[in-house]
Length: 340
Image (cartoon, rainbow, N blue to C red):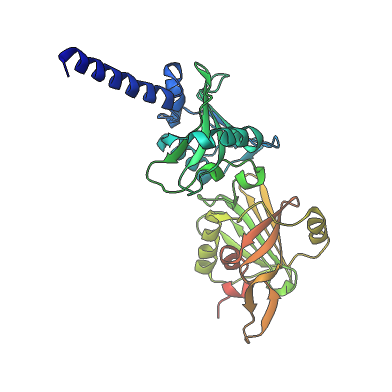
């Protein structure tokens, strides 16, 4: 092979390689459309997730709080927001979608996929993901990218997150009830004025604690409607510490609207309410839940109630699920605080 022919073969090989790279990135002009990563997540001010049924979750950064705003109505779960930010920071292209699967992937994304817009200030998203299903081996997720500069790509890719094996599409959910912050009694500084615990089935166990800070404590029996003159102040102080952080499990009750209405027409087992130092009040009514983990009484008899969860109604409005291991410690009897 002479020198010129050898040079021609090398040039053809280089051109072919460049052509392959060009096609993998959606063409030379579409090269950024394979760059899904958002390096500076601190600059993200808002992201919007929309599904094929037009359900929307709008998350906006609150500069005065560690919690993001959800649909301009609620606080959002900090863990769910952080998971999204971590994902887009570490997201990487695993490879192109095989030619044989490309049209099916595009149809699926267009028909039942999710659209996620990321904003870094301004009115236009800096990047928009169109998210499809997981790959068959569940190690990647089909996605399409759109940017203001280059428009919407025509080439889907398989994405994964660096340092994680699995699929990513379930992280981008639109259910507002799942997104809601689960903190109920959230008083890290113990800015509490009063705690009321009512045991509706055994009223003699019910009590009120009035707290003025430090050793300014008063304990009252709600049943006898009298103050308790001599009680274990250390036990009461330890009890109040529980209210630094009490979370429900989820705002998704898994009940039908009819079942929720039926629950609201029954009597609560407990009511717990907290009034803070500026007069704000939070309340939860707790109801027994049937089924689930077995529950036994102190004699070993099987009870009809779930030993792991209860239903709750927050501030007379939202029906929620709570975990017993979180709430059982606060559902105490006044006897806990009485001196033996």
